[in-house]
Image 1 (cartoon, rainbow, N blue to C red):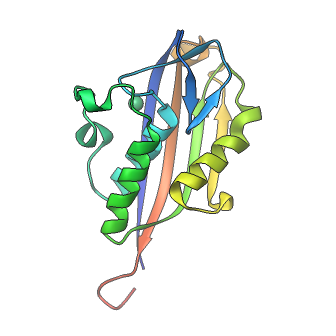
Image 2: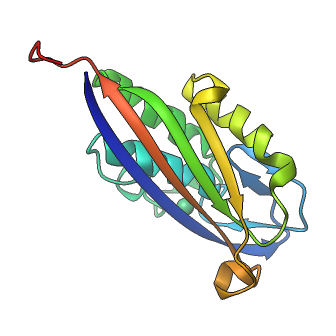
Length: 165
Ligand code: MG
């Protein structure tokens, strides 16, 4: 087997009057993330981790935020299309570990739903996906409730082509 690891990070600003979507799950809150797409920072971080692991650049290369086709886009599309690209190269996802940074809302009650959502999108058992939630300790842009961030690490594998894997 060949293995590659990838990491992804994303942050979006919070503003009133937007739905809050994290990991493909709509989270009840009086603010949502601002962005060209639905601004799902979790899915953007996971997509970047997949692209990074496969050596395929970043989400800005694949889905430019200047492209009107992606205005208001459901970010689940970015993840599933990227996964299909990796599959075409023979890569399969082994596991995903995600950390979400949010002062508010408290994400403990939605971690399980995010895990199920991510596992479903990646075609993985829930045991291969982990979602952790951290506050911003009330400092910085996240701690002041101005933004939500996400960090993702993913491992991918494919059969070695040299016969020695
Ligand atoms: Mg983003």
